[in-house]
Every structure is written in structure tokens, then in C-alpha cells.
Amino acid sequence: MRECFRQLDMLLAAAGVDRYSVCTARLYLQDVLNEIGAVNLVWQVYFGTHPVVRRAYGVQLQSGMRIEAALTAELPS
Image (cartoon, rainbow, N blue to C red; front, side, top):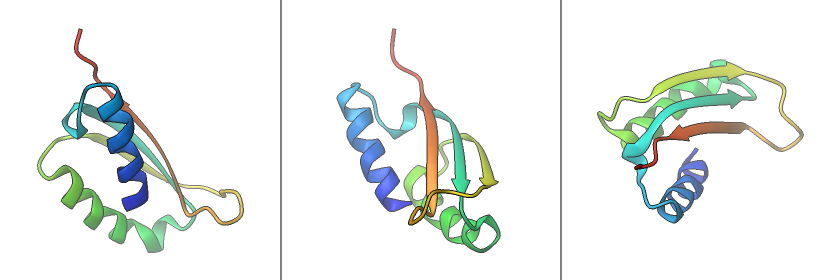
């Protein structure tokens, strides 16, 4: 998850915003039952009290992948 957030920071910076512009997230985890606790810890450190509407799904990902994420951020008009 930390790598996802590292990449997200770069994409957001290129768009001129930061993590506090993120409003929704969909997380797809290979083993949601065993990994959601660790994801929640990293999530809390990254977003703090910033409210993001989040859903996590257990899915079959391609070999070697443990997580995939789709996030939406608001851009200034």
C-alpha cells in the first residue's frame, strides 16, 4: 500500500493537488480478510482524519499482485 501512495503522491503533484483532494477510493485486495488490517494502518497514517469514501473488495488479481487501487481526486476549477 505504501508504494500505491508513493505513486499517488507523484500523480497528484503533477495535477497540482495533494492527498487531501482524494474523495473516493476502491481497493482490490488479493487476500482482503488477512490484509485489510495492515492496509487500514497505512491508510490512517497517509490520510489521517481526511474523510475518503472507501470500499475494499476481495478479488483474484494477476500473479504477483496483492493490491490494486482506483482513487478519485477533485481538481480545482
